[in-house]
Amino acid sequence: MLATALVALTACEHRAPPGRATPPDTLGDTMGVTPAAVRTIDIRGHADLVENSAAAMSTRQPGIWFTVNDSGHEPVLFALDTMGTARGRWLVRGARNIDWESAGYGPCGNASLSTAADSSGRCVYIGDTGDNDATAASRSIYRMREPAAREPGRRDNLAGSIVPAARLTYRYADGPHDVEAMYVAPDAAIYLITKRPFGSRTERRFGRALVFRLAAARWSARAVQTAELVDSLPIVLGSAFARYVTDAALSPDAKYLAVRTYTQVYVFATDSTTGRLLSTVAPAVCNIASLQEPQGEGITWMADARRLLLTTEGRGASFHILTCPLPQ
Image (cartoon, rainbow, N blue to C red; front, top):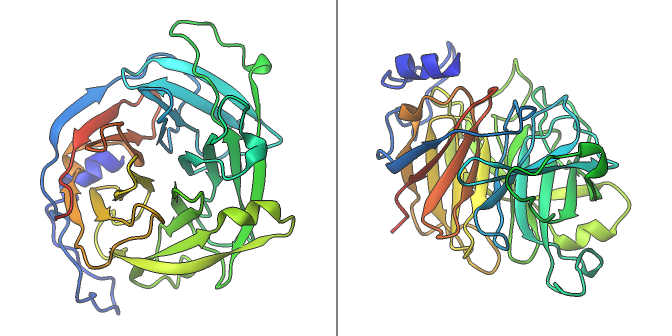
């Protein structure tokens, strides 16, 4: 179990595999400050939410956030509130859950997805972006208008709750990548951050997490799109125990990007217009190993753009709300 391993190995110094040199910027697993004001909240309802692999907070419905199950489950979008109460679930029309690993929230970037009363449009994005073996020729992202959360305690008929979605199919120019982190910028561009070192399972090398971008205009094309490599993060994937990127979230004011691994949260300063990282500002790092999550997966910002909500996989698993420092 990952939580048990984290307790045993968090304080240990990382050693590179035989025949490989330790990267010069490798840091120990104890890197980062302790999070503050930690709250652990149980989920009530949604018995079928067993692999809570993402998180996306609404800015239109106070206290409502969305999530999905990992691979192999029905294509269902779940809503909860920050008290842990189930607030609805919807089948995503025409979607397949091959390896749903990420979710985002932001502008729809398409007038056809807006309502007459809400011309700006806010959408939930689901990323079928996972690819553990880095073998998939293409991956997909689904985008749907944000559904209205159900009242607490309302009985949920999944067969009668369907949300239509648009689909964007894309590839990477340099070959397949395993991605579990996705966020949506103010201009509706999508950013994808790699989880693992590039290459096959037997040939992977240490390397920084790569950042790819899909412009909002890509949704209008029918052909498979190519994600553009635009940046990399100072997170050396595989350089320490559990240092793999499992999610990312842009703050509601678009000034900060939170990127999580299994044991750390990195908070980067960003350009509030484009969502791009400001490379001149060093990230703040928070160590979350003490949470002992079974398999920490999701992250999203609370409405105040100060606190973070973290999810973990596991049947009946709780989620956490906490505060990490912001970059200076």
